[in-house]
Length: 81
Image (cartoon, rainbow, N blue to C red; front, side):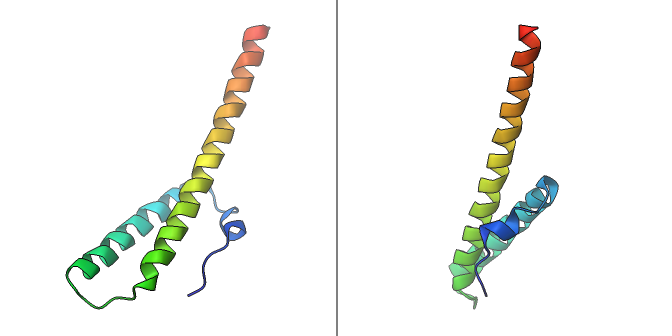
């Protein structure tokens, strides 16, 4: 399995990112549960899912911070008028 590139994730919408985050957290829980109960699983998948989850959360945070800055700048402009 190939590690995802950050540039590939940039084109996804915020709602799709949220859905993927929820799905990855469920998959991570399942993998951790399999590990704890000593069931067979591919251990490298934990690293891949954690990295993808971190990338998605980072992108979502960056987008939300950008939106917040734009809104605060807009409000500041309105207050100056």
